[in-house]
Amino acid sequence: MSTQIYLSSQAPNDSWQSNNLVQLIDNDIYVVVNDDNRFPLREIQKAARKIDGLGVKAPVLTGDNWTAAQQWAFALGFTGVNKLTSVEFTGAEKEALTQKLAVYAWSRDLTNQTPAELYPLSLAEKAIAYLTENGGDAISTKVTSGEALAEEGWMGIYNVGKGSVHPPCLVEIDFNPTGDNSADVAACLVGKGITFDSGGYSMKSSVGMFDMKCDMGGAAVVIGAMALAIETGLNKRVKLFLCCAENMVSSFAYKLGDIITYKNGVTMEVANTDAEGRIVLADGLLAAGETGAPLIVDAATLTGAAVGATGGDYTALFSLDQGIADQAMEAAKAVNEPIWQLPLEPWHQSKCPSAFADTANSRPIPGGGPGGASNAAGFLSRFVPNEGKGWLHFDIAAAYNGKANELWAAGATGLSIETIAKLISE
Image 1 (cartoon, rainbow, N blue to C red):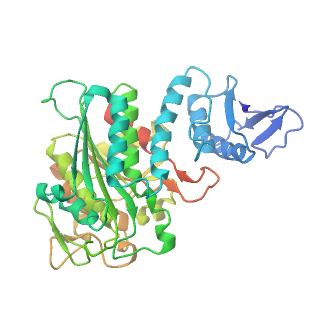
Image 2 (cartoon, helix red, strand yellow):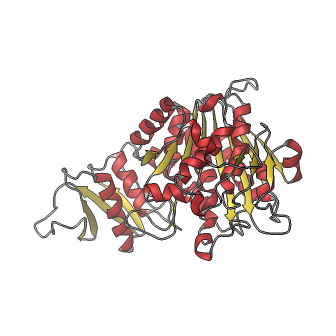
Image 3 (cartoon, rainbow, N blue to C red):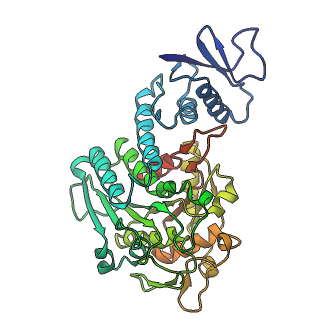
């Protein structure tokens, strides 16, 4: 049964209590957010959580007061597991909002899936099927898996994933609406697709491991970003690279002290097998660099340090190119997705030293030590072309919530999908 939801800046009757966000009146629900509220979208998202708590199953946003941004804030707050599309929008933006919600729902559902049902090759299959559904004949794909990764030199993904019974893979999805195989690639997206992260031999605790089905959240976000861009008229060639592996413990697993040599000649000593995301992303960034694309965007649930810095409310942004970082900040602001730029300089490359290789993947201390998120970004910067010009790294600290809070239901959020979609479409 549907429930009408009205939005107002004033109390609808004299019985309204001034501190209430939400009130039921004659089987309809009113949300009141005063005009002088500094964070009206946040308040609407909080109101949606309260309405979800009332047991409402199918909210219908009703009346002339709803803007597109307000409706989207409500949808983010209300939707969750088993009801990711359960909001009916209103007004001129109804179709566009419904389309966007469907993309976010697909991405969020993918992230919420269990490790038993989502493993590297099944992630590849789902991504290819979904984007082919969106992009049709403009989509072509390549999947490099198992021993073929080592044969082609993708040693980061190969080593992280070789300890699992589910083989790792590098997925390349090419959206080329021009029909010209020699057309320039306008942008590349790279996603961390760790379908489960035990930590490897640097094993996580049970508490730390419990939500690690979400460690492919970066892959889900960039898949969603490409899908949303395609559905809203993307007319440029864009390539997507997914770096997919399970980080497991076995007699075949990679170990502390191992040295991995990348295709660009960089040698890396494994100081922490639980800092695996950057190891696989390095391959994806190298693959993206080979295309000559002027814009490379990666997304990853990469560091606990980013969560610590942002409180899990923002996506942490890193770049060596301030011009493109400014564009990302403007894009995020335009679509009301919270983002915060954290420090990154060329000298961050040296923050994970090794006596036996060009670099280690981390420091052998908890959390990688001070500045862990910047140090991880510094590691990644070794694998991008043109000294980082045109490269953006999204450490998506706000990608997933293990428990419901005042803004979100438990599970994936999909945050940064629209920001990245906007960046590759401009």
